[in-house]
Amino acid sequence: MTAVSEKGISYTGGFFMLIALAVGGMILGGLLPIPIMMAMSGNSLTSVTEMMGNPAYYREMQVPQGVSAVFGFLLPTFANEPQAIRINRF
Image 1 (cartoon, rainbow, N blue to C red):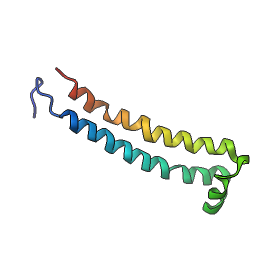
Image 2: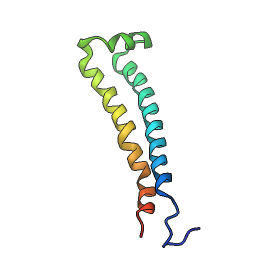
Image 3: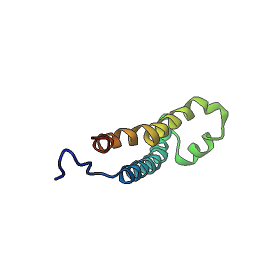
C-alpha cells in the first residue's frame, strides 16, 4: 500500500488508462446501438443497415449517436476519475 504522500499511479499510467477506457467505450458504444436500433424499429439486422442510409429514419439514428457518444467519451471519464484524484494528490 502506498503512503498518502505518494501518488501510486504515474501520469503516463493514468493517461494510458484513460486511452484504454476510451477505446473500450467506443467499441462498446459501437456495438450497443445495434440491438437498440433493432428493438426500436422491430426489424432485422439487415434492415438496420439499410436504415442508416435512409433519411426517413433521422430521429432513430440520433439515438445510436447519443449512446456511442456517452460510452465513448463520458463513461471513460467517469471511470478514470478515481485514478485522476489519486494522481493529483500532493
